[in-house]
Amino acid sequence: MAVYLGISIVMLIFAFFLSASEISFVSIPSQRVSHLLRLNLKNAEILEYFRDNYHRTLILVLSGQIISVIIATTLLTAIAEEIIGWLGIVVIDIGMTIFALIFVQIVPKKYGLENEKFALSFSPTLKKISKIMYLVILFFDKETTLFFKILKIKKEKERAIEEGEMESMLKQSQMELDILPDEKKMIEKVLAFNDVTVAEPMIPIVNAETLNINSEENKISEILTNAKNDFIIVYENNNIPGILNVKEGLKNIVKIRDSPELQKSLKTSLKEILIAPYFVEKDKKVGAVFKEMKEKRLKLAVVIDENKKVKGIVKMENMFEEIVGGV
Image 1 (cartoon, rainbow, N blue to C red):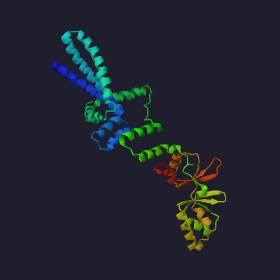
Image 2: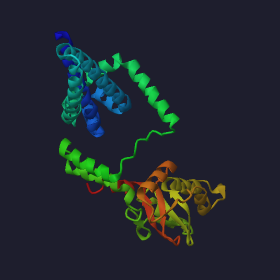
Image 3: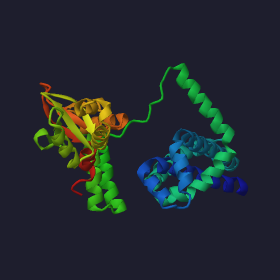
Image 4: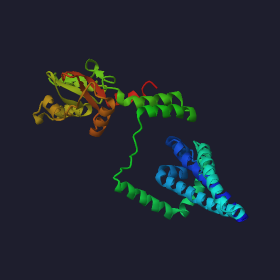
């Protein structure tokens, strides 16, 4: 009888900690787990594994709880029946239902909620239990997958974090991780990156470096020699035939001057090395333009309005300054 009682107590304590771990792993924010990993905290990797594989973790803790409660109930029923007869079965059934609700569900879940220390300390034990119950976990994992397929229920994919959620996470992280004001400001700029249009980092065309392809060769040479940027907008009448790499333009000037036998004008030579202009509308979002320019390996884009009129240029570094500028 004493052995039965001892085993029952151990099983109920075991169920308590399993229930606490169920809520503990999911209540700790993923960014907090990542921070613990960067700090090389003991058991942080195990915690990350259980959190990232929460479906299997849930199977482990629930099946463990049920098995523990069943064993405890069976043994306590045997003890009660021996003492007070058939009435002991009723007493234990009612008593264990109330006990399980309070001490295997409500209390441990409140204890485990956002309890980082408990999650870290209990992770190694749970890892050992998962190895012992590997076949049980595998069985129920396969069964639930089959159940979803039969009912044609699609597992919900991980939802993208919305900007509002990110801002809330940032406020929480600033309190917990001592994020500096400058760091917070930079993160806020990153979050706002997709809300800004190219009109904001745009350089008005009147302030941009441009080159009229019909200018005299000496004038072209002077403009390219004094250029402050690596790329320059090229005009021809009212059109923009392309963008010129300043270094390549200067090389062509030297090449033509040193090789008069080429019989080629500077204008023709420069036209051959122009980069096709990339036009973007002024109300297009910076995030989308930045991504496209990165994929196309472009340094600048020509900004136009709804009437296709050139308003200015936007450079990669200008857009990058939207994040780091002013910090």
